[in-house]
Length: 362
Image 1 (tube, rainbow, N blue to C red):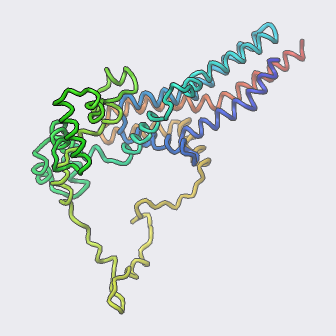
Image 2: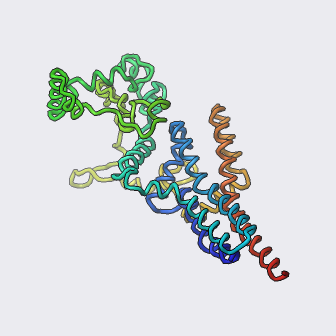
């Protein structure tokens, strides 16, 4: 019976775990895998919050490393079992343990409309798209959009965080100048509800912050207070209006020429411009390596510590001491995860062979 269970593990659990690991590294074309790829980019760029970073790593290890160790321990328990009934009961018990957290999330009471999942996904897209570091740094904003730093500070009331200003965001949010007609009506209704003390109407027109957990409510210091208000403090509309058109418009005349009829057309000189290593095109890559090959190459770099050394050196050159230490810890966890995926099938084969030899000899 123990041999039968190990065969099931080898032909079902091992491939399933490898595919799950492959998808979690963002290597496939599925939506799930692409979200994990975006999540990895956000972490590499240092844009994630501590809660996000900790949750992502716990999720990654619990669904990969932890599961492998659990099955390896279960195999040991099965071999040590005295009867076929004990083998079956142990196997069923461990299947229940490994899938317990997933079954909880499939319950009707757990995020029934996928509201939290959608909100978390949208936050990932926002973090990956918006350059929030530029929006709260005069120096970075000046460098990114070619606007003098002095002029930026003058237009933003010399605030050190530029657009990230809670007080100014609250003022601009209640200023009718920055509202459309629908927002003006709702704001007026809210003011009337507050004057009359109508609590139901106040809840209708003034949404309360929503939190995913007690941890987020009492321990997290996130801008905007709540799941759906994290970026409210960037809504300093007056400053946006002052700075929006200050960036110089690029000159595109050299891209066009005039035809015989006097109409603008693309210049034929553009045909002579090619992608080279010396002058590469942005967002252009001739690398047609498949997802699987990239996955294998990345796995090799992680297991040989190339990925760790390269990342630490890059961060130390940029003076990111804290980030380099966190990256080191993360790289150690990654190495354990990759090594476990490699050892797990070998462990099952070795135990299966040893058990077969023992059975035939006795």
